[in-house]
Length: 160
Image 1 (spheres, helix red, strand yellow):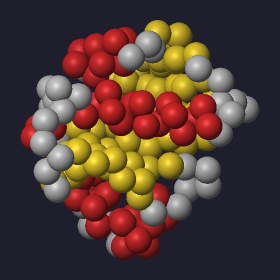
Image 2: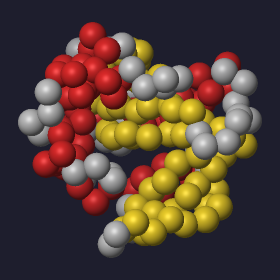
Image 3: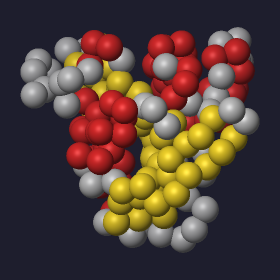
Image 4: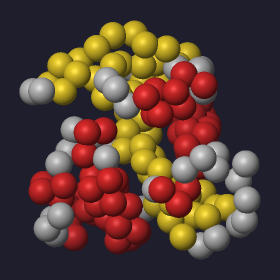
């Protein structure tokens, strides 16, 4: 499905501007899909963006399609040993329907497996059917739910 030149790039704190561009686009495009709010990040200083990319044990990636960043995701240590959380997953409109989401998920999964994890876990807003479909197609199953303020999120896991 991926056409054109595709590159997955792991980001460090020096790549904060690319991360910021995609993250702000994500929060504006799909505010229902994230626990963070655009207002919390839109005027954030460089230090906050760098700190997000420096979270201990995290790996962050951006997919470029023909040189344009079109997707992002992070793998972060979960609450239990051997669990990696998939967070900040977003595919921009220019990358949708082209396999970018699957590519990002494989990247996070490969990193988790290499790091010795046995389980991947994510939370997805109820009603976010496209994301839920992607997660189910790639082997995730619903294992619970989480309520925060006026949001209900499904907890999904995948065994590695």
